[in-house]
Image 1: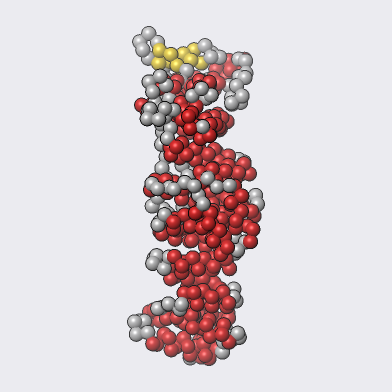
Image 2: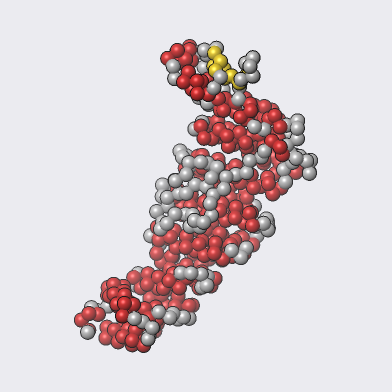
Length: 452
């Protein structure tokens, strides 16, 4: 994983060609913070955890930080940090009673001042959770984003769980979201959006040490956001047939209750599917083969979803990820099947014809003439390049004859096609001739060079 900020999408090393974020022009966005100004005056003092660090003011108005074991005050974080490293403080800390806080095994005095303040403000927010979950969720969500950088995973985990609990309560009961139109109220859209970000942050946190739990959290986050049952992710594993999985994925996408009318929501949905699919694929190498097929199902859903929203470029990237996914798993025959998706939906995309031709070549390498012939027939032999036309006619003749082609006929066919193309210059001819020798020689009874 290239990223360690749990509030930005993780990039997982899947072993596939390229990384999972094929859409490199999409820069990950940090989650929106709920600012103090968006809440009612009575609750703003709880919003910013930085303002709630356990500090006081001296007679000149300068804030001070208090060290409980040493009973000393400090006017800056720098001097406080230096004090924490001193032998005197360490001796006092060892003699001081241990903290009874269930949140962190560290003594509160050894925590960063921001984290210390977060613990205090977290308790105040938790006290509000039942009475006013809208305010409590806002406070806890902001606290989580402020303290995550300090490496206190146990504190961050507790704060995220508290925020998510408040959000789930509001999701179940709309009356708890605050008075509609008031500054502190949550809309259904902002609630669902922030719930996803909170759940993904929780999953990213666990992915560092507990991949099994992270797997469950990732899947739950996506299904909760889309409003689909968790067993929907098993559509690909049932038959392990990509063609059926694509059809079922399209049906599943059509059943999603949310409309995703806004561009921002569409981007968030496709980004979540992309990250979750990549995470499950990465975890499948150590956890379970089931995760591989769940990754296939989610990527297939991303393709169908993008098509539905007329995001053909995003859908085409999903097909490319499917190809890389199958190739990385050693399922090259399934990656060739992806040519059918390209032919059906993406022939206007740059590189589409190359993907179809590559699927034909890969089928030939696997001695699967039937698959190669089916792809070519579906494509209706619409190749223009001499090499592609040669493959199309050669495979067609071989499949019809149900036998290995005669070497002289194969070479004669190639000569006819390449010479017939007036636009083919000598450099291109040499490249194509080299490709013939490299790709077809293992399948022929002769060396093309011997027939000259």
